[in-house]
Length: 164
Image 1 (cartoon, rainbow, N blue to C red):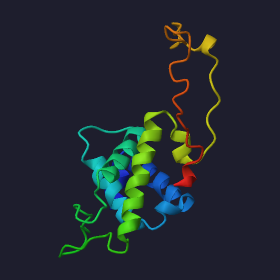
Image 2 (image 1 turned 90 degrees about the vertical axis):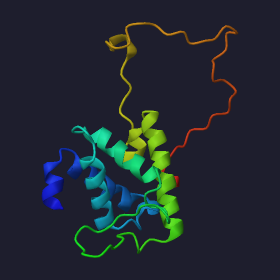
Image 3 (image 1 turned 45 degrees about the vertical axis):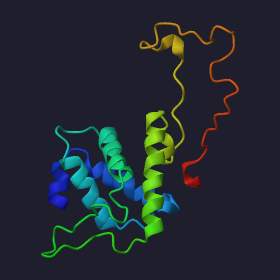
């Protein structure tokens, strides 16, 4: 496995990130290391082109979010065994559901540019928009009524990824 993982550009990085996640977030702690490494290798090697670390992490969360860990799902067979052995047998049904749900939440955070919450770090400082080359056009900040378009919708921001 290690030889195959080293050949994939982002595999080792994503494995390290998930190991950290398993240590930091109690929901992820029951995820067996061998199963996690196997899942990462399968997810990244099945991509049609080399993936950046960010895209590889997203792909792994997508695989987990799709229900691969859930009972009745495809599971993760151990490629080192002659007979079919599921590498997830040590995990309970609730633990599998919790990790699946947490991966779905992590995907939402990635989609809204909050990867720092998934990685357990402080957000990067905001760039001054006057000096941002990409942001050369001004945006309208209000709608036709003169109020902010999201005002009053009651959208709540998850403050901490650890609260899963």
